[in-house]
Length: 73
Image (tube, rainbow, N blue to C red; front, side, top):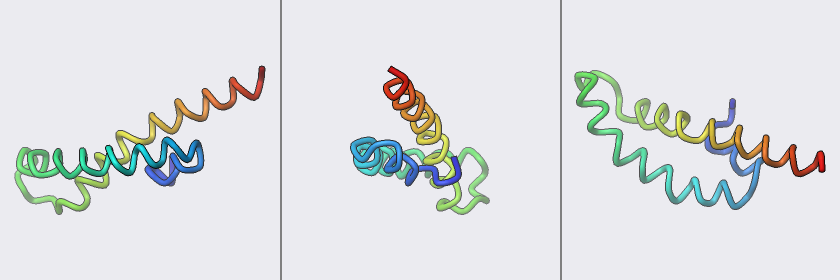
């Protein structure tokens, strides 16, 4: 959870690559409307970072759980 998007590379290299090419453009697309909805007072970089973390942390947790189930078998 601490590493956010970079943590996906730890979970799976493929997940990290997919996140790099999908989540970053998605966060760039969602950031301006979100900042506008928040009154435009927040730096766009912080909004994009928060959106990226919100997308990738559950993805990383699901990947770790899937990996641990595979190891347990």
